[in-house]
Image (tube, rainbow, N blue to C red; front, side, top):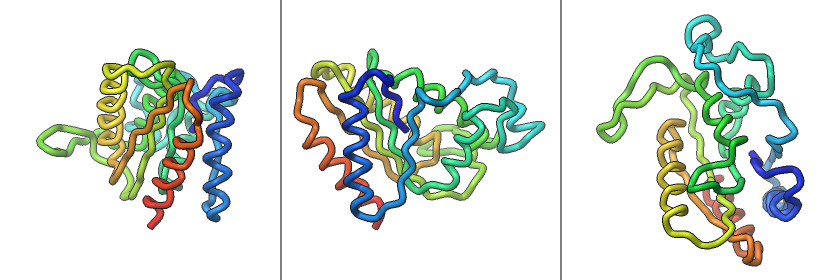
Amino acid sequence: MDGNHEEDVDLIDISSNILSKAQDDFFEITNISLFEKTVSPCRGCFNCWIKTPGECVMDDFGRELNRLFVNNDLIIFIGPVFHGCHSTAIKKVFDRSIPFLQPFFRKVNGEVHHKMRYAKDLDIIFIGIIEERDETQEATFRELSARNAVNFGVDEHRVLFHCREDDPTELIDEAVAIIREFSR
């Protein structure tokens, strides 16, 4: 899921190149540019748990997100990092993922988390685009991504960074290598 702004052509090119190289390996890929979709903020009504279990009551692309999590083995989130956090488009995806979970709890590494609604093996790659190297922002983004991975019940996740001033070739090759690794 691409959380880049539509006018940020350089970042969109990075996403396209990762997808193109992965498709060359015959992976079935769906590219979703979140800025082309309407994903309203979660209302916190919890109707997706009570009235329509597993489905958001708001009729926009956010409803489709749950199907994407269920029907795919790997999700890649790529977008700019702001103060160590994901883009607003990606944050809305995380918020609207509540239907993917149940209103019941489980313990994970001594912590309390929601039970998963579906028995699903899901892997995630988080790619953060940063303006310049910043250890604090990168550490915050890594921790936030790891916390989101736990919430999604993810088997494995990886976090990659790309500094805008760097050549994107290394990032693209590393992302494709991880895709290949996860597909085994």
